[in-house]
Amino acid sequence: MEYIKALIKFSQKDEYRQDLINGKLFFNSIENVRAVNDPFDSYMSRINVWDADVMVLDRPNSLKPIVCFYAIIDNIPTNSANIKITREDYEKLRNSFGEYATIIKDVPKFIELIKQTPFSSFYGCCDYSGVDLPLVPIFNKKNDFSIEHEFRILLDNVVIKSEKDDLVFDYYKDFFVADKCLFLNIPSLADITETCNINEILAGKKAEVSFDESKNRKTVLSNLDNYLKESD
Image 1 (cartoon, helix red, strand yellow):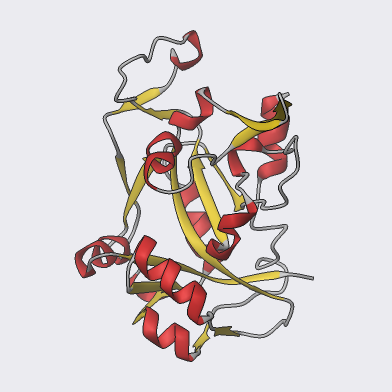
Image 2 (tube, rainbow, N blue to C red):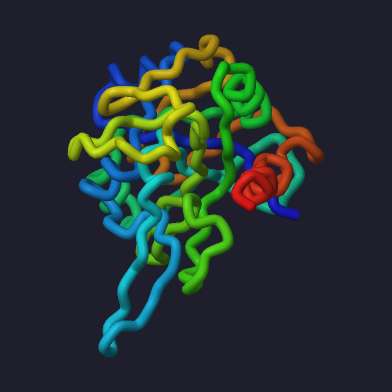
């Protein structure tokens, strides 16, 4: 049995970390993330054209807001989490996401706070299997990015306006439209978070977490089955 013991948010600045602790969550669109990180984030399929692999991207869903965390997963049913990364991963994570780390130590409570917001949300760990036809495209990433251990939260009835200003699909007619990004306010996370820096994680850090054997299961901390049902 796999358990999600904690979530980590890496930040470039301490002020961004304080926003998170205060309950101010920053959401960006997958389309914007593609421009700075993985250009093939959330592809729908891979096809071969003239002996070259072509990735088919998910256009409508790519404008929905997401927020991403590094998931600490193990199979030991205890209230402690051993957090450590390799030197190679350290360089990539620090360069991509920053040196400031916020550890969310009660993941079930955090998800409950997200569910209490006015927006419909889907959440779970991203898939890095590299299959040609991913089951849940919006939570699919290339294996090259598996070091991110990404746990993603997506707001389903919101869309972030594209810079191309081509938001004309009938698909979006009932959506709340945000301009460039979205900040979602939830209650303070001060009582369920701990701060450190990425150097401490490189050296190895042990964190005491709130753990419930049923609530912290990886399968329970995901509602992607519901996402699949809505997509049918």
